[in-house]
Amino acid sequence: MSKARRIMTVLFALVAIFGALILIFMPDIAFDALAFGIGITLVYYGVRYILYYLTHAQHMVGGKWFLLIGLIMFDMGVFAVAVYDKAQMITLIYIISANLIAAVLGLIRTIGDKKDNNPAWKLHLAQCIAGFTQVILCLIFIRSATIPICLYCIYTIYTCVLVIISA
Image (spheres, one colour):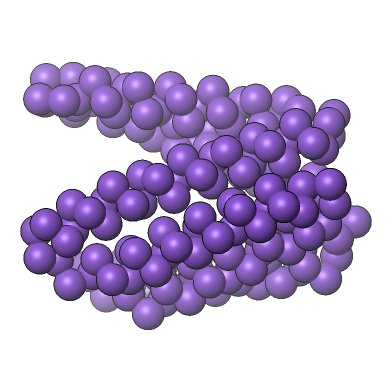
């Protein structure tokens, strides 16, 4: 990773930590801001994956996975933006399921890193355990909208600290 990329990664992580702290201390806007922010982020990454497929991955072995992942992320983002102010329970379940998928994919990545003797597998495993813990706690406290939001913000801060450490 180049120095400029490391600096940008650390700056993005610091902005994310700052945003998470704001959402913890301003719970009245936290739910809408979080659902809308996640939706826009998913749309952005979905479009990036689709564009990558259209420009590079069409002729690669397994390149259709980029298209599939891009379409799923785009669809999830559009859905999250469409219902962010309609039903909090639906949006909470949606965010929890997206985090569960991310934790499972992280666990698969961790297993691959362990097989390849990559020293970063321990860091990825810690992030997976935190992700599964967040999902379980959010399911336990799903009746309250503020507790899952605070748990999500704490998980975001934890992930950003790991990103800063690894950068």
